[in-house]
Figure 1 (cartoon, rainbow, N blue to C red):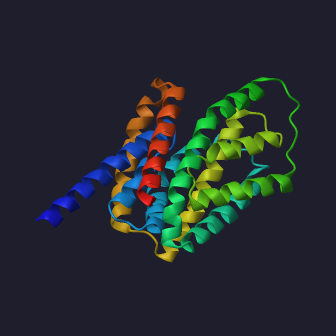
Figure 2: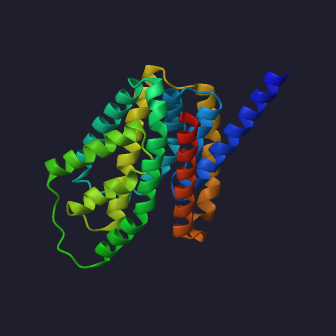
Amino acid sequence: MLTGLISHWHFVWLVAASFIAGVMNAMAGGGSFISFPAMLSIGVPPIQANATNTVALWPGQVTSVAALRKDLRWDLLPVVLTASVLGGVSGAVVLLRTKQITFLHLVPWLLLVASLLFGISGPVSRWLKARSDSPHEERKPALLPLFLILLPVCFYIGYFGAGAGFLIMTALALFGLEKMHELNALKVTAACISNLSAVVTFVFSGAIIWHYCLISMVFAGAGGYVGAQYARRMNANVLRTIVVVTGCAMAGYFFWRNG
C-alpha cells in the first residue's frame, strides 16, 4: 500500500511539474528547470530523464515555428538547418555516451549555466532590439563562420539545451542580421530542429521512458496553452527573474544533493 501511495504522488508531481513547465515555456522559457528535476525525483536515471524531458517538451516548439515561418530568412536557412542537425545529433550522441554518475554531477552546473544565460538574455535582448530599431546597412553574413559559431550552440541544445536560444540570436546579429523578427524566427527554427535531431537520436537509441514522456507531453501542452493566454499580460522582467531564481534554486538543490 505504501508503494502504491508513493507511486501515486510521483504521478501527481510529474503532472504538476509538466503543467508548470508548459506554462513557463509559453511565457518566458525555462520549463526544463521544473520538468527535468521532476523526472529525476521520481527515479528516472539522469540520461533517460534528460532525453525523456526533451521529447516531452519538443512538440510545443513546433507550433512556434509554424507561426513564425513568414519571417524566416530563406537564404540563411540551409546554414542554420545544417548546424542544427549536426549539432543536435552530436550533442545527443555525446549525452548518451556520458556515464550516468558523470551526468548527474554535471546537472547542477548545467542548471546554473542555463540560469545565468537566462539572466543575461534580458540585456542582450534589449541590445538586439535597439540595434534592430536603429538604421543600419544590413550585410549578408559570412556563411562558413556563421556555421562554425552556430554548431557548438546547437551541440549544447542537443546535450542539454536550456537557455541557448538567445545565443543563436546573438550570433546571427553579430554576423549582420538586423531585424528582430527575423532573428526570432531563425532562433526558434534552430532550437526546434536541434531538439528534433536529438529527439530522433534518443528515440532510436531506446533512451525514452515512454509512459512518463506521454504524461509529461500532454500536461506540458495543456500548460503551454494556458500560459499563452497570459503571456502578454505579464512583465517580461518579472518572468525572467522567476525563471532565473527557479533555475538557481534547482542548481543549489543538486549541488547539495551531490555533495
